[in-house]
Amino acid sequence: MTEYMLLFRNLSGDGQYITTPQDMQDDMPRWQQWMSHIAQQGKLVSSKPIDYAGVLISNHGTADGPHRQAGEVVAGYLICKADNLDEAIRFGQTCPILKYPHGSVEIRSILPFEL
Image (cartoon, rainbow, N blue to C red; front, side):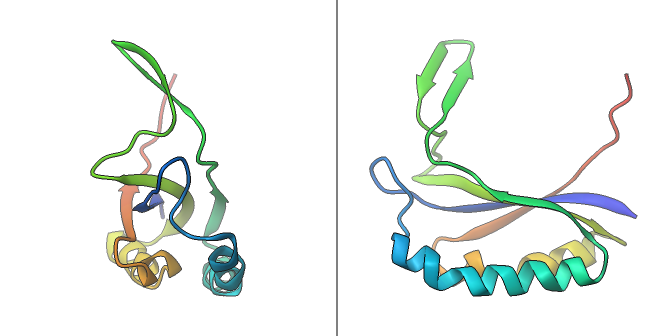
């Protein structure tokens, strides 16, 4: 079984996610149900939302704020176990972030890191 990271992306506003606190509260049951479905199969490793504030470090120095590409930011992640990429895709296709017009899920396999 392979571990996969599902990265949740959405558009951001000026200094905040575009979802309102009320949207987030209304969506919480959907997220809990979605993650519970994965957990019940013994395939949930971890999941957390990510704070909007952050620091980007590059060869040019540091900059406050999240890295935004075309206005999108990573808003959270889920690490799961899946038998194959197709199963991870099925998990991603039912993710609540997809209710938003610009919401997306990026799926990447996690490779072993040997010291």
